[in-house]
Amino acid sequence: MTTEQKIGQFFFPAVFINDSEENIQATEQLIREYNIGGLTFFHSRASAATNYEGNKKIEFNDESYERLKALIVRYQKAAKTPLLMSIDAEWGLAMRVEKTPQYPYAITLGAIPVGDKELVYEIGKQIGKDLQSAGIHYNLSPLADINTDPNNPVIGYRSFGEDKNKVASFALEYLKGMTAAGILGCLKHFPGHGNTNVDSHLGLPVLNENLDELLSNELVPFIKGIENKVDSIMIGHLAVPALNNGENTSATLSKAVIEGLLRERLGYDGLVISDALNMHSVSKLYPTKGILEWEAFNAGNDVLCFAENVPEGIQEILKRADISRIEASFERIWKCKIQAGLITESKIEATDLDWKSTTIINQKCAEKAITLVKKDSTSSITDFISNGGSVAKVSVYKDCENPFFEGLKDTIQGDSFSVALGEENLEEKLKEIVKYDTLVIALFVPKAKPLAKFEIEEAIITWLSEVVLTKKVVFHLFGNPYALQVLPNIMAAKIVVVAYQDLIEFQEVAAQKIVLNQAYEGTLPVTLLLK
Image 1 (cartoon, one colour):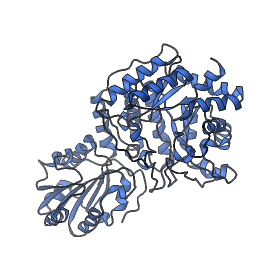
Image 2 (tube, rainbow, N blue to C red):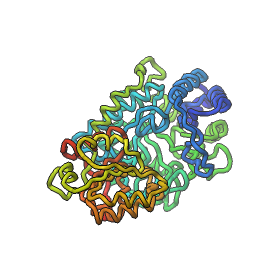
Image 3 (cartoon, rainbow, N blue to C red):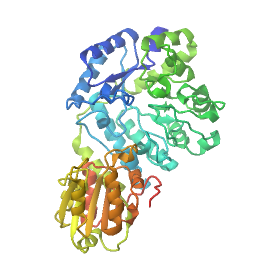
């Protein structure tokens, strides 16, 4: 390759599975003309995280998975040099693609006992197999961020929790699982995005720790990953003034962070990839096309993810970069392409999606993760409910025909009620419910992110805060455990269980725990300030 063609390998522009034919052809032209190294797949332009201003409606497409496979074949045909296909699939292809297997969020896995960490390995392996089936080589996951700020708007449920050693251990298991399936992995977001309260898609978070503090906490999972020769590390769009002479420079644009800390101090020689360069924390810094790409490369990134100015970026790097640095980055990318089986004939054969295996692993995770936060009674939950007078089962934000209630129906007798989001006759229905002595309440939290109190309605929050003081309440939370913090008095409930997700397997196991009086093995992965 010419030097210019080698520089093209550094660029991984975004492509959208449900894009127009015109845009698909434009991508093919980009591949043919500029010898780009790879592509990063997203669902659609409307689903891009920076589409907050446009607020375009996401149009779902049940054919997305087949479209993804077909597009990968089509784009590879346009490429002289095989493309490294990447996607962000932290909890499986379902993060980006409809009708594909979904696995538990990292915060859910963080509730699993350390002794059962092989389940995280199995999750990583199964996700890897799913990616292989579609033609993807590179998963931009998992997070190595330690989540210590409950108001973190963008990490939260995507982190394994607040324990640095558990985060490090589980991230490595996830990576090892993907490696076993032939998929490249990525630890992110260096040097640690957990203790921040700004969404880097929209603004620049600032991490105020000094180097010693970072080395003793945020950096621990990354150090463990480096010791285990992690395939790649993604640099986060966050400022660490202590590493940049007091300046709020994004880590993605900081030589001090990438070359100084990651390469020299921590001894990492693997692939370094930038976080998406379309994110507003950096994308608006340089009005001249190509300068952002140059600055990100100059700071030490090998791969420029979601680069929006490919031709201009190539020319800026060609004009300014040292040839030895170009060769070093090229060699790292080439090594990954060899490992992924793109250059040699060592590629693992892709298989079809294995839904049965997904169900089995999800069920095992549910059995180990579901957490008993509080239990006032020494008797079984079934006996506690049955001996409590009249019983109402209340499903908040999901209808009564859900797997949790189905699993309880033969054991827990009583009337069932459902409360919809935006319920028209909410006040009357809630008055009817409080006529019962014992309430089995399942709250299916609408959103995983903490914005607007996880979108739990104020009327529901108020009602819950009152009813736990006057009734015998058995409360199950299907959602982000941080949601408990927005529910005043929730610890006045007689029994509080966090089931983490509304996946079918988690609902079924939550019911099974009650019906069969099974032990709860999960532990909260984060500290909650509960009342």
